[in-house]
Image (cartoon, rainbow, N blue to C red; front, side, top):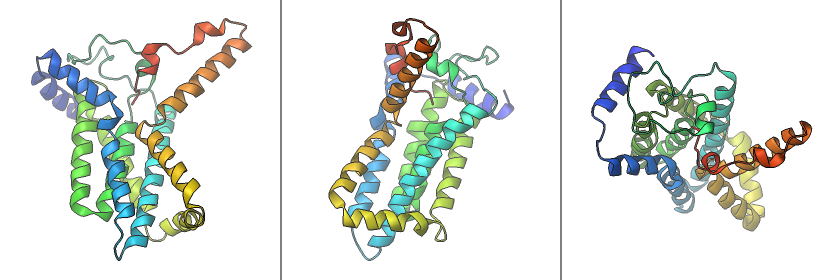
Length: 255
């Protein structure tokens, strides 16, 4: 563990709350989707419908922000898979700190690499898009993400500070690239054209997409994992019931 991570985690663990109720509340904030992406996504819907002289440009930016968030989430999962595995602080025996979550044994958390934090990548990417459209609200969105998404995960020992910092930087860069004038119209123009021609199905799909983005596609991922395990069990002539996702897996939020 580097000095930067060590200094921040030592400070957080030294000043950790001693109340089980407070720590449980912080864990709830980390787990519940409404404390992660609901606020930024609601702001983007507000921007979409508020109109004004820059209405078309703002709609392009909203689409670009959602696309950036989706790319950030996908990039986070790919990086976690292909980069060298990094143990989460809460499970790393070389980390000399006690975290509020110490003692938990969620399988998915143990098997997912700590770097980068896809929560930080996704929601900082979205917050950056909000900032580019609506400055002071964007600052609030970034502060919200930094506190309720990034800091909470470091405090609980789910990530090292460099995990969330690296993820946040990557998320910001993805949005800055995808919202550039030379890039944005390449994909936002055809999307807007389809939305204007078929508003009812498009807004329905947009609602479903936003729901899944807020939950970070957890349910879809769990379905995919279950199907994969059943296929593995079938291929290995094992009992598929032994490979079903248990409650501890369905409750886990890996990054």
